[in-house]
Structure formats: C-alpha cells, structure tokens
Length: 354
Image (cartoon, rainbow, N blue to C red; front, side):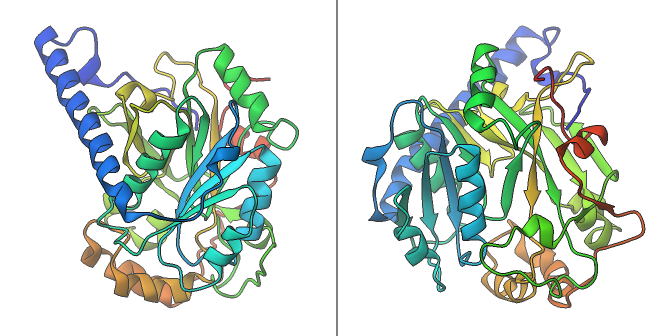
C-alpha cells in the first residue's frame, strides 16, 4: 500500500538519547522472550511428514498454521508453487477434515500436527517462530494463512526469486502488504466453490477506498483498517475493526520473531516497509479469501471455539452476523481486474521495481 507517513516518534533522531536506548533495550528483551517462548513451544508439535532435509540454500519457504482447509488447499498450493515457493512448512491445528492427509501426501510439504490451543500459542505464532528459527534462517520466507494469496507487481510474469533477488540487490529485508478482503455479490454462502477453484474468481469484489492508516509509534508498523469488515461489522466502532497491514515476506534470521500475527516483527526496523520521505516503497497485496462459502459454518464453529480473538466475547456479534450469510456487496464495490488496478488505486506499489 502506498504510504507517506512520518517516522515513528519513539525512534526519531531528535528523541532524547536515554529514551531511545531504553526503547531499544526493552524491545530487545521482548524479542529474546518471543524466541525463547517459541523454543519452549516446539514440544507441542508432532512431525507427521518431515521433509526439511530436501530444503536447499536459496529456496523460498512458506510457513503456515491451518485448520480444516482442505477446500482451499489445492489452489493455495498451486498458487504458491507458481510463484516459486520451493517448500511448505505447515502446522495442522487438529483438523477434522482431510487437511492433514492431503498435506502429508505432498512431496514439497513438511507437516506438523498439534492439538494445543491456537489462542494460547499467540494465534499460532509461537509455532511459526519456532519453525522459522529452525528452518528459515538465511532464506526468503513467506508466512501466510490458508485464506491469503500473495500478489505483487508483475506477479504473473515474475516469480518470487526475481522479486527477492531485486530486493537483495537493494538491501530490502522485507515487503509489506495490504490484506484485501474479497467477497461475492450476494450472500457470502451462495457463490459456489469447489476444491481447486480460484477463490478470487469466485468472489472478485473488494472495497476500493475506505481505508484508514496510521503509523504505530512503538514498533513503527502501519496500522491499516477498513474494507468490508469495518464497513459492515464495525461501522459504529471502526477502531475495533481488524488491522489489515502485514509483513509476510522476510529475509529471515534466527534472531527475528513475529510479535502479533504477521502484522509486526522484531527487530523493529523490519516493520518499516513504507516510505517515510514522501516517496513509495515496493508493496504487495494479500488477497484475503475469508468470505468463501464455507464462512457461515466456520463462523458458528469459531464462535464456540473462541480461539481467534484475544477478547473473543467482544466479537460474538461479528460471528452472529456472519452466521446469517450477509451480503457484503454495495454500490461502491469494485470488481478485481488485476494488479495494475490495485496499483492505480494506491493499494500496492512498484516502488521502483519496473
């Protein structure tokens, strides 16, 4: 997403030296805590298919935690293989459908299983941080959910190795994205989808312009809110709407750690994927396919499980609305026509990559 924001005040050069040193020390301790926590939580994972010995230097790796995603998985795997992902490292969080069996049969997938709580693992990030620490060091890594499909400028013709090679040449350690909620026209459970179908074709509509963003002082990340969820479910309390800024693509080092999903990382400089000098930085979009026709049944299940929000009771109304199969389309909805359209709308940027 194009962003022209001032640098976060906590790290501004004019801030008192002692204040900046205190912030740096505190964040360093927090990062070390998250790494140590991830090492402890490794015992919660049981390997079902460990093929990590096949990982080669320079391979682009994808990391994900998922549950009951067998309908999305055929297209998810095909999309990221097309982009150039060489190996998938996936944690199955106690799926009850065919997710684990499907993944275990893939020769480029390493699979772990856990029955431990998703919420108690910081929404899966303890498991991701461990696998990133163990296997991601020195690699370009993608950390995404099963309902997130990465696109970026020229993605149809230039695979990830071309993109990451360009970033390496310019010393860019990470790329930020906007998570763009997609939806169908009509009730969210009415658009037919079969395994292998491209969900972007099934629900090609999105909100083009109702986004708000601000730079968070503590970690320097962009906090983006808006889209159909803010418009439909949080219209009276927009500050409670989900945040849409993520940093999924990172040249990983074992000392790094995700803090809050893939919204923020430590060290702090990895979050500064937006320009602070009036220019633009390279950015992509995560096509968010949450509102597939399975969303109604999943909303009922997730409300009962209470694993997806820190204050789950506050989101009961959100799940209740989704269980009624709402129509998220409105007269201002835009139909997706390709990455150039998103660039023209300011939702992604080439940032010098031409």
